[in-house]
Amino acid sequence: MPTVTVTADSLDKTITENEIVLLDFWADWCGPCKQFAPVFEKSSDDNADVVYGKIDTEDQQQLAAAAQITSIPTLMAFKNGVPVFRQAGSLPAPALADLVAQLKALDVEAAMKAQAEADAAATTPAE
Image (cartoon, rainbow, N blue to C red):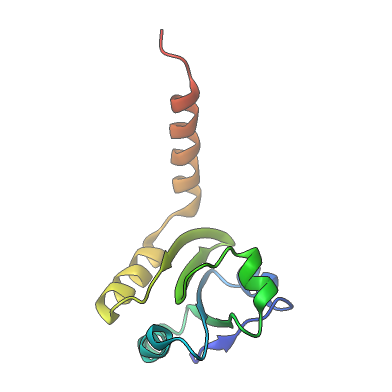
């Protein structure tokens, strides 16, 4: 599946209406972004069940600011509408393939429950 352009107008719909969404925050002047683009495109071709969105930080400055993007490229991943991954810098093809495999296997509800339990345990005073 080819990558899609994501804007402030389409972001929420893209995230909520698709199980897995990868977002690449990029700019045309960014060398590392240009190097990562073919890796991102190839991965999108290999994973038709995942939405690969590209957000041009120059065109979508308010969206980039709202997402607190301070370095590009930045890759964000959502599963079932929940943000589950964020990393600045480009990924090599094997690392991106591994990330996609982990996203597909991730049980978001179980992970959220485990995190809530860990947070509760961390805030409970020891006796």
